[in-house]
Image (tube, rainbow, N blue to C red; front, side):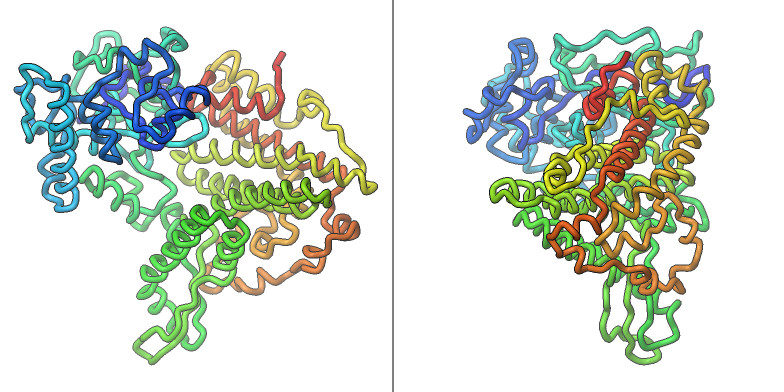
Length: 638
């Protein structure tokens, strides 16, 4: 099935469905003690600490409890991970005895394809038996445990369930929605996205007349261009996390509406592998079928190599590229797993940055001309490099927090901790600028760009607002009293006005301002700020020194096979004695001055407001991003 726009064009940044109620849903096991099992809202800490080691379902109100509680679900909690099983259990009352095992509630189950996979079929059969045992506890009259139907319900969840994310971007559960949402097909270059709405039942806001279903199944016509909800099951009595679909490109009437089922910042082969593993289809969208591959897909998998003993570089690179990628991926996964298990951010930072700088050295690789040695390095926009920037930003931030705690206990000078915060902010900023560069070639990356600019702004503001600057003031450096946001209003790009318009008036005014115009003014404005701040942010980090201007990736036009990577890394290298010197002179050399703090604050404001502007297009003016940004800026509005 597929969904198409009705008899009217849909502009960028418009809701194209009302809030869709789920057919079924379930919290992930790890959030059962902290979130309501019905509406997914966070519980007060006093409500769940006492149940921390007891498998149970908790609720924020009697309304949620009465609409959701099931003794059978409690039984399934003893078979973790149980979210798939609990979601399938809740589908069964909607499944009539005569339901086809091919479709339930209008949704494809994919049972035949999934059961053909030995590993998946074993999981499905085990899950169906667990669900049958749970249903027997309830002693439901006139209902039989049809093994095939139970398997089909679980296969439907595996095929159609989407992750539900909270305001912090964490996946806290899954939900299955009806055809109005689930019939929207996947594309690796989609024209729409979706957002979760998590709210207790008594806090769900009514939606305006503009929140209507503006899409319809292919081949369906409506007299007024608006297609009311298709008459299928009404879902879970109005409870559970809702979802809204929103346009991220202009969609012409009758054009198919698509969303992404997978991470778009991955190369084609990984996207296809993930889509086949879960949904059993091969994506044939325009991006996947492009020949030669699009620029974005090319750089997301590009690896450079230097040959230490042979001149037959091109043939060797082609032959060993996949193996090198696998080894580099395994190494990053291994370091990340160790970091999460052991909690040593310093070791994680050193290992990952060393990998980015030195690459992978494959010794004595067998080639036709004899034995040689290849050194593989990730393209700075390789999907694994982008993932590494994310991990480094997090690890440096945690390392800074650890150092702040240590210095506060011993009364030392926290300049080293401030340096770690500075490098963390630099990696967040690099991730935002790199993704924006890719977005210029693939507009469907708008959601990622919005999130990364917002994160970069938050990191820069956290750095500028750090109390460590005040500690430096005690050593003779001026203490900056950051003025209110209104006094930092930028006359060049007017992002604050765009932010206010987004909050107050909606997308019509934003479209009048012009998306391209706002973006152009923002880039022009931060160009001078970046020249002032970037050199300060990256001091002490050898890898980041390679990016002289993080907003300009024109130097990547050179072939990476002939790029003098080592020369670029060592050129204008810093004096590392300054990095380890904890004297006041070291602080002066690193540039912790009043002006750097002001520049960092101003750059953070710009990034956060622009991220908010983009997020408003993706998620709407009243989604959680607006309150998060207002809080980060201490912004009260007019």
